[in-house]
Length: 192
Image 1 (cartoon, one colour):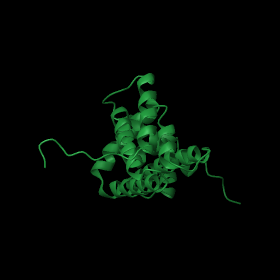
Image 2: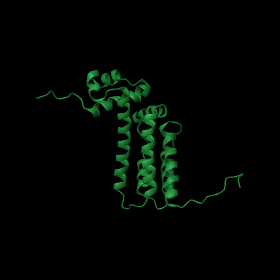
Image 3: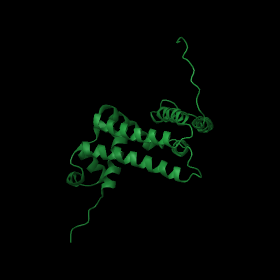
Image 4: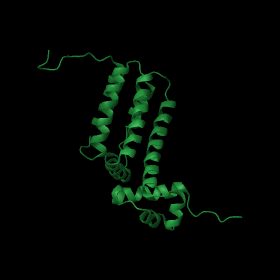
């Protein structure tokens, strides 16, 4: 009978996420993850052969958590109309926590710099956008609401701007309205 492992993959990823939040994705290393988890480097290497594999697993887990949370919110709705965008709007009611904000900020930098990680983000976003449009009564309104929602989250997650709770709630209500309307195109000023 083999010895039980002291830490599982999720524990290693928790430690890696703490390292990323504290030190940045560029400073992630197998040694730092092992030290943070309180295990040997060999234990980390058993599950993740490289720093890149650890980073990819952290990113994939973040996507999975985000999609699961929104899926749960969507499942709690009484209607299927506008299900995906409404789940996303409901998920934005509370800004992300400060510790995860640091991890998200540092992971964002890694996504920009790493083509393979960026491809994972692009694929995830393509699925979300397709779902938002597919489940919407007004696909264009829902797409515009999603773009505005992601802009709100980007401003806050990158710590460029923070909205008051009241203003955030108002913006989210207005995004819910936007998701249900059929936008009217207008010419851009100075164009024919």
